[in-house]
Image 1: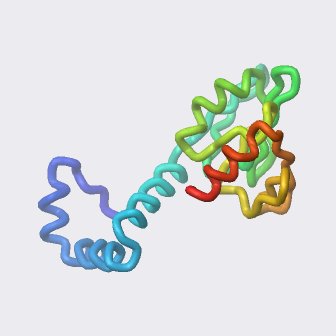
Image 2 (image 1 turned 180 degrees about the horizontal axis):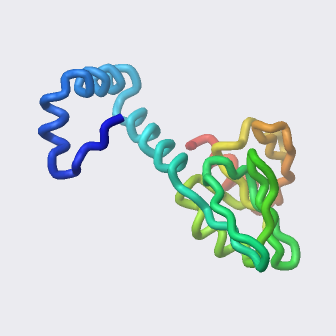
Length: 149
């Protein structure tokens, strides 16, 4: 897709009939909220998360992350393409990832709302069939966030 200069986007939109028609069809079918969701999904798929430890540094696509677990300041990042490790606090990681739909499901685990398939009792079932246990303190917050996501 051709990149549109931010100064000329209005002119490009008004003169590019294909772009205008595509956007009009999309808005008619999905509405403004659908467009907002599409922008949000696009933003997530383009963002990277840095995993740095003593031996390596990796860029991970945020959309590929399923969940993060912590044990004694060692964070394990579970993704579609493998498992990564780093040192830190879950609180700091949540500050970075919360805008992209991540939430605590226990004191030692944060999960991507995009990767949740179902919630049963105190368990979160992910789209890859992994099961994460939720702490009682977090159940209501996770259910509300999942239902609104």
